[in-house]
Image (tube, rainbow, N blue to C red):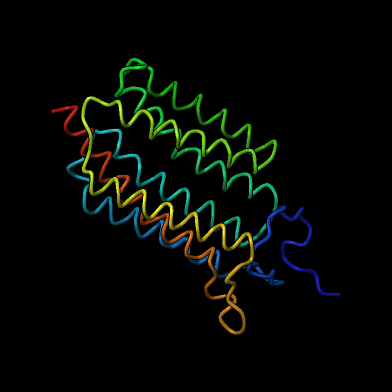
Length: 224
């Protein structure tokens, strides 16, 4: 009897278009598309790393890379605890932005940024541990908080970058919905090459590029 590499672990309660393979990479299309996050992270460091050194935004490329690595590990294995880690990695991003905007809107003092960031991440991770679906609701709540605070900052970034980030994010969300609803699934020989979920990863990564561009503009203006 053949035993699959990840067969000894509890499978995640997560389904979509791509069927499981009995191999080290259970969902190849969903796994390899996470390379987009790493490409964006490297591009941001090369393009803006020197100019943004010393600013909080300089941490964003590392967070983007962590999201990609966490998502790759989960989709390669499709095991439950890595599903939790996948959602938790996204909380690092939303918590960073929320803490930054709480600071920039002067809701919290600048020296409380790190404590606020850790507290927001911890709260989100607790939701993901209870149930990854609760984690997604927590991410949505934090994202809405970021949008609300962004409108109340003393300065704003490029409107073009903001529109691009939102448009790409919503397009990515549509791809995720199509995948979970198993609508528009790719069949045949390309079934493990590309799926709607793949586009969710690529479009999400591109949206984070514009999130970075928007945030760096805000931080540079606020810090003169």
